[in-house]
Amino acid sequence: MHRPVARWLGRAALVALASLTTLLAMRAWEVSRAPPLLPWHVVVPQDLDAAAIDRLDWAGWTAHEAALLDTVDAMSGADLPTRHAVASNRYWSGSPMHRSRRSADWNRSYLLEPDGPPRGVAVLIHGLTDSPYSLRHVARHYRSRGFVALGVRLPGHGTVPAGLTAAGREDWQAATRLAMREARRRVPEGPLHLVGYSTGAALVLSQTLDALDGRDSICADRIVMLSPMIGVSAMARFAGMLGWPAVFPAFARAAWIDVLPEYNPYKYNSFPVRAARESSLLAREVQTRLGRRASEGALARLPPILAFQSTVDATVSTPAVVDALFSRLPAAGHELVLFDVDRSTDLGPLMRTGTATPEALLPPAPRAYRSCTYSNVGRTDRQIVEHCKPAGATTGSQRETGMLFPAGVYSLSHVALPFPVDDGLYGLDPDPADIPGVHLGSLPARGERGVLVVSAADLTRITSNPFFGEILRRLDALIGAEPLDSRQSPGGSSSSAITSASSRPTRAG
Image (cartoon, rainbow, N blue to C red):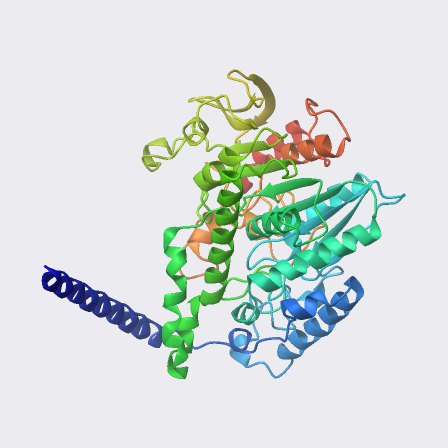
């Protein structure tokens, strides 16, 4: 009996080895045909590792950051090959996207202080391949409400994509700890809010769990998460295998999932294998720790969480936000806000079967957390209604928002949530005074193929949030700046203004 089993196991091992060999051979063939790597994919700036960051204060970190960005500028000097000295390359000093063209460089860490004595402090952690730019609107709102807003640049970010071939989750966690130390140094008393976007949200949870486990002495009073990376696709677990051929210099391109033109001044377009693997490992670690604490009944000490998520998200798992996080939380003032797709759109017949509604994503009520959804009044109406159900309740309330789904927009996206429609880079209706060198969020999406360096997928993916005022309204309730049931969206954008701006035909895409 043992001999047939051993024979079967041996055959299975041979099949697995043959499959792996075939996969690696195909990967090597694929990268051999790819364009060569460029300096910003090869030259790795010497960012700090976790041990060095833990020894630094904020002044030391920002001094290191300034020197680091100087080395990046040296890389994009006059000796850049002519074929790369083009306007669409952010690393060419003559490009309108080059950081020297900005009065404020949002690729670096920042500290925004209120006009008067601070009433609290907010730490903001950006996402993978992003920069501190991604949470600048949230940071400015906190500042306007009397908070010190502190946004930290995660190691490997804000410089060149090659930086992410060396930095990893332990370095990002150390940068989060550094920001928390500086926050409490500047505001020893008063509320401390920890805000995370995408991978930054996973770092927020990781730091908070460290504090609850006694590994860190500083714990936030409130947690805010936008498009939180609680779960990623199953394939992301095996991303590291794609880079195995890169151990041979001839196949160095295998260390990259994407090598693309770098036209975005505040986000990498190229994506290394290591970054995918590190973010996946971080998400899995957070899920494991949440599950362990939940089984021990030890999640009651988590600070109240306010999370915002699109029901459709191509980057992170929306069901994981519900099932792996919120369904494990005890009743403690937590709230989940979901933005639905436009169910009234003419694209209905083209929408994939199984596109989940908020009701399908959420478990049956009563739930231990408050839930709010933004969706259409009906199948033929673009008007948006807010449906809220308190924690522990089986029935809820409905509020007319006065907003419409913008014409030509059928859903939000992972990247859209932290940006208002007037953001200069990502907005559907960019503010003319906010000039980042290019308006990616409002580029026309129709024309001939091959003309633009921007892919069609990037053009059609919405990058700003027509309902951003609702996020700020909830932040105000969290801060105590105004009642939650206010009908006026804060931050200078009323509901009627959003509707008007969104109805412009030139911005519909």
